Length: 562
Image 1 (cartoon, helix red, strand yellow):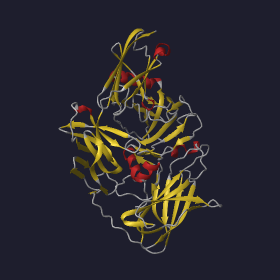
Image 2 (cartoon, one colour):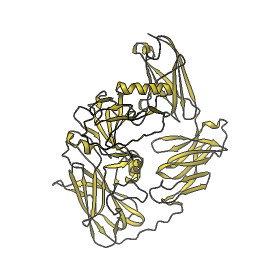
Image 3 (cartoon, rainbow, N blue to C red):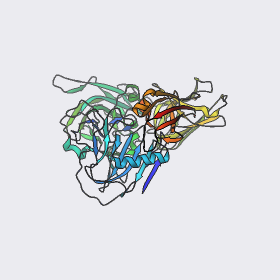
Image 4 (cartoon, rainbow, N blue to C red):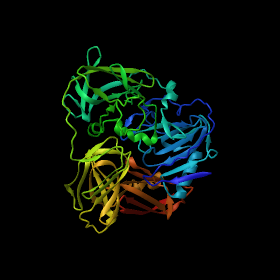
């Protein structure tokens, strides 16, 4: 029995879990090539922790991929984003192995995928299988490596998850003997975090980044002295290294001691997939968004439920005496290669400015709601990582339909939260073209929304500045090498949209569904002739592409297939 779930182009994810008696079995290598990593487990990424290993495939696609243990294919997903073509193999020991960015599946899996895609007339799809549907043996070929989805180059994304609770676990703990690493982590910088209204560092309440230098003996030291008073946190910028590559990796273990006593101890060996967005409170968000630099906090914000801190302390340091406080960082990788950094903070009594603001106060541990100035914002409990004071205003410089709505600084929320804005000049006749746009430093992001009685409701995952726009311009369909479609037995287009983005597409040949595959990162849409489903001769091709505001472009052509 097979279960399939069609997801829209940017659709959701579904899982089916199973448990069996635990059976011990050693793990095979997922590929029969030397294993070198371009990314490790827990590595810091935009809005998420990396949940597996990125294994290099010698710069090419098409390396055979095998099941690492006995089990069955429990899920296959196909998407233009994310993991692209991905396989999930459930094992009797209660783990699931995941293989992402694949080029293609083994024939016995590919048949199931194609049948489901055609039956549901969708390229993007999730198929869930039962234990007896697609059993596989350790070392059996299940796919070929590729570069599909949001991959930045050919590689295999490989994960190990706990089947029951969907926790991602470090696959390197299973593959340590296949990968050599004798290189310790590298410490690059520190950052000090005076706690709002409670602490001060070097006379300031602002976060203070500190560069590091090496002396002739190779010992690292701070470039300036640190004095503090009250409650502060410390963060560290560091990367790991491995033998045989020039890549930078995430840190496995961080220990911070103050006067010989451990105040913080994190181990990045597992985390729940649903908790991956806690990265945005584990790092200094502002430093990342402005300078693309990761500083990892060695303290836990009150709304951070990631759970990697193994210490009983939350990591906040109280500087209450006028003396030298001795701090020591100890960083390790999974091979126990170790780097250390020692430094002092001088306790110096200083005035701590009270944190008084006129802005709206949003406590992290309560449901929050704001209903003023044409703005309705709901922030359910669990979406803030710490208490926030938000300056909320309507400003000039918006659009002809509404002002610029400013809801604090650009800051992350943990989940999507409802936001409704007034369309103060509701003059455009076709209300379906309205959409909320978030203004960012690097680009504007269309959020869309639903119109109702002069207002538009959307969902946001970040605070910041918003405006209301209209999108009336349909997508652009550009044929690629149209004269060679017959010779290449492949039809290809580039599809683009200026504002709201590609939402859906559908292609037909002689009014029958044709499976066009979409590579979003290259804006490439293509169909490879499938003579099991189409006949030779004259074919009427029709392609419809729709954007997020419902604007549609149609391409029609006649072609001869030999």
